[in-house]
Amino acid sequence: MIKVSVVGAKGRMGSHVVDAVNGAQDMELALTLDAGDDLHAITPENTDVVVEFTVPSVTLDNVLTLIGQGVDVVVGTTGWTEDRLEQVRQALAAAPRADQAVFIAPNFAISAVLADYFAKLAAPYFESAEVVELHHPNKVDAPSGTAIHTAQGIAAARQAAGLAPVPDNTETDGGSRGQVVDGIHVHAVRLRGLNAHEEVLMGNAGEQLTIRADSFDRISFMPGVLLAVRKLAEGSHAGLTVGLDRFLDL
Ligand SMILES: NC(=O)C1=CN([C@@H]2O[C@H](COP(=O)(O)OP(=O)(O)OC[C@H]3O[C@@H](n4cnc5c(N)ncnc54)[C@H](O)[C@@H]3O)[C@@H](O)[C@H]2O)C=CC1
Ligand SMILES: O=C(O)C1=N[C@H](C(=O)O)C[C@H](O)C1
Image 1 (spheres, rainbow, N blue to C red):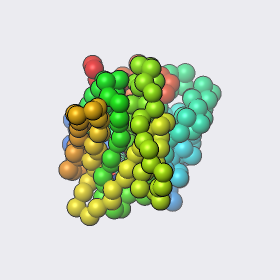
Image 2 (image 1 turned 45 degrees about the vertical axis):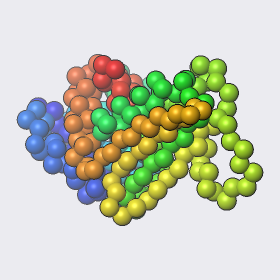
Image 3 (image 1 turned 180 degrees about the horizontal axis):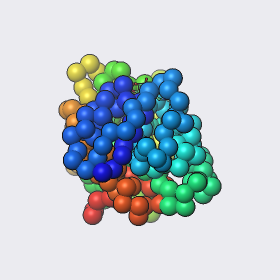
């Protein structure tokens, strides 16, 4: 049995993870912690893998503490920059166990992972590309971690293909053109009734490709979370891994 602890267990995602772990025949729920709890309670004796869904402002500190505790960590929280990822790599290099692992996924839903993948495939063939993400209004960060990741992937694919910057003759902008991530405009919508959605728009003269992923319910993230827990428990993914696509045969 894989012993799984959940950090952020009272949150929207954390509470779903608790239910998913309780429903998995090969896992047993160890500790469930939330804001104010001491993460040092989590040790290799009671936990194989920790699942961390908290808030962007605390996730790095949580992950560094958990690495120091000698346990593997699956992270779904957003807010990861290259600088923060590097801090995780360095902490893992000095971790108590040589084969210790941290896995971070911008998105655990297969629809979103595939949309991201398809966007990278399509990117070299279109002059224009923009990303629109749409979420529930309780979300604290904008744009979404997934949209940032998608925009970065599109930008890298365009650069590798030698494409020019996206065409844009905007002269006045009060913010309507969105946040620019590596040259790709990203727009965020917050609307009651929505959960997590992303649309990638690509255009050429006279044509448009739309790639859209809709996560209507947080249960859509759970197969991906459980897959990541199982992969880390296998012990063959030491170090830092980013993106669920790394665990799929794409
Ligand atoms: N990777 C993915 O597939 C997904 C990622 N997310 C991301 O997961 C994160 C959490 O989202 P939600 O569950 O909707 O948020 P939420 O606000 O419902 O839950 C966050 C939980 O973390 C707890 N928390 C805050 N500070 C803490 C600390 N220092 N230690 C332990 N717990 C602490 C809060 O009390 C709360 O219970 C966000 O960054 C969100 O963008 C959300 C959905 C899917
Ligand atoms: O806060 C959310 O809800 C979500 N957050 C993640 C993100 O910012 O990309 C994943 C998904 O979009 C849901």
